[in-house]
Length: 209
Image 1 (cartoon, rainbow, N blue to C red):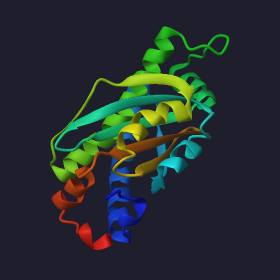
Image 2: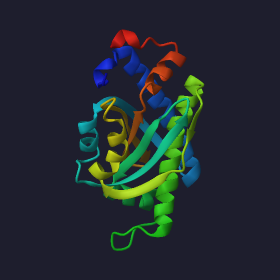
Image 3: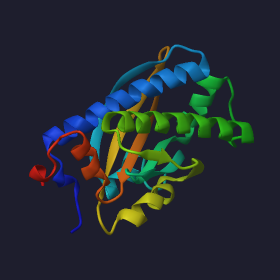
């Protein structure tokens, strides 16, 4: 039976929000260490979205975005994405690394930096999830893509669309001085992986279906 976002109740959503809070805290610390600058975090927002809402949150299917993607393997399986707009990626480089693209084209070094930043942010959330659940979960080598949101996010959607149609979305916003750097984190768990998360935490899951 295909699962939809309606299987989640308020208790399960609260748990996912708490995981988002802890993951964002880890990400803030990692960013501050990476850049050597004080970074503040605004309270993240965790939501459950239909697949057709995911690309819209990233700006629309045809919006050009910068996305870091990796697979999670082990007891917990799924696809993880950190995506931000093309403009915000440039702002991130200018603000955090004192670098900016020439003629709107990312250099090899800038792509490497964005890949590393995305990898650190995704790894922070995955680390929070592993610490809380004590499940075995390992990240694959991350990949970075600059393309339309619909094309990039379909990597995870096509594989899962036969069995589920939801993604966990966490909106993140980091403050460097007065500038806000906003991005979106998506986790698309494979079938049965989300059950393992709640079971490991002692949170009832079937009751919310």
